[in-house]
Image (cartoon, rainbow, N blue to C red; front, side):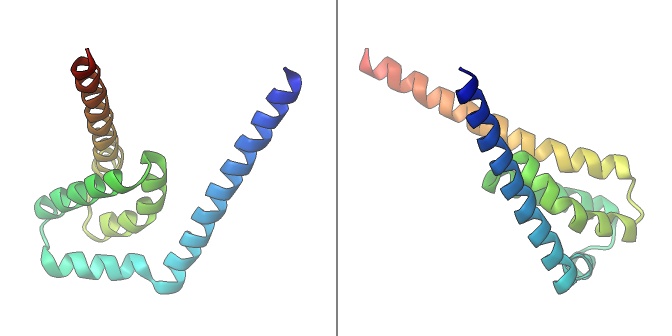
Length: 126
């Protein structure tokens, strides 16, 4: 029992280390490529009003939530979107809600679809 517990902790530590290493590399690439400023310039070219920018960020986070895990998406998109928030004087509370809610929403929707599919398949086999 204790040996399995040690292996589980070792595997969890290895996975967490790999994820943090990947995030570190991506953060370094963000700085090297000046990605936050390019993103601010691109979005500012499309819209200047924060009423238009907030739904764009919301849609962006929904798409990110569909493509990757909630926490990873938040960790990767947070630094990019923070520069956008600062440049357009958007409240940090608004952007925090936009960073967290859409990715969780897509996760909930995908879980609901999987449950619905498994229930329909179970009923079909009865």
